[in-house]
Amino acid sequence: MKIYRCTDTPLEVHGVPFFHNNQIFERVPAEIRAQLPSLSFLGRRCPGARICFRTNSPKLTVKMELETFSPDVGMSIFACQSANVLIGPRPTARFAGLVNPPNYQTKTASKTFSKSSEMEDVTIFLPRNEVVADFSIEVEDDAIVEAPTPYRYPPILYYGSSITEGGCCARLTNAYNAIISNHLNVDYYNYGFSGSARGELIMADLINTIPMSIFVYDYDHNAPSAEHLRNTHEPFFRRIREKNPNLPVVMMSKPDFDYSPDNAVRRDIIRTTYEHALADGDKNVWFIDGQTFFGDTDRHFCTVDCCHPNDLGFYRMAMVVEPVIKAILENNYPN
Image 1 (tube, one colour):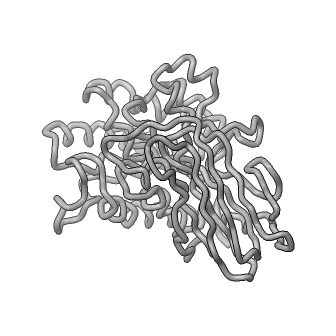
Image 2 (tube, one colour):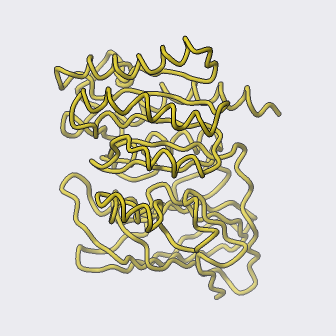
Image 3 (cartoon, rainbow, N blue to C red):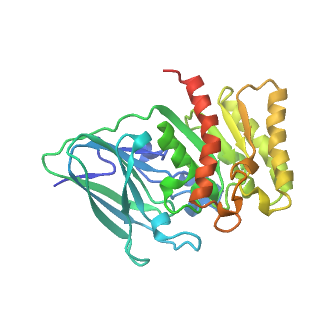
């Protein structure tokens, strides 16, 4: 068997913007984490990180070692500590299975997958909740391993709450941003931070250093009050706009609209940022009302706890957000 570690070419790591500079799995560099203690751990874990390649090996073994292991009251090992393996072209890739620890005491996992002997793309989503210590794949000795088929579109960056981060889907590929990525073949960065995305300008400055095709933000869940949201939402947008004058920006309100009496007030604050941008002549802003995400039928089936979407909730979110994203991408990147 031939072994490739996650840092070896031709494997590519996506969803971790600084990996190619330091070969570290982290979303937020140490110097920024030092200034935002709430991200000391969350900034190191990498939901949405993907290892991508092509191979004709009929057998593929994926091995993973976790540095951390933190049981999550709202999600299982399958959702939090497992790698998701997809095989085939991204818009129609088939789910091959999970690479998951067998219990809450084991930080290593390994699984062998069978596939055709044709050259196929393999996309492996890393775990949502943990810091990854090591990751490798094994293929047969005579197999060819190549760089993956490129994504059709440059990365979208999503900034927001635990919902953005993927809580509480059954597995990470069912999060709304992952669904959109696979449907549209668009790369993405997941900058959701559970309870810890509060519109800090230092995060806007960090995000401004990351090349992206679209910026989507919906951190109102993490704003401790409507007043905090009012004081931060528009300044955050304006800081992004200072460095990225033509960047498409999508503003969204929270999906679980029905469960809090101040959600209408919060939605109006976000809409006001959008309306001020339009009044200033900004033609690259969009607003999506989170109340529309769960539809009109069986809305109460869409969360696990009156807050975090389940798989149905995330799918319905994706079906509302995806057409907006698709229209922007097709307009800005015509083929």
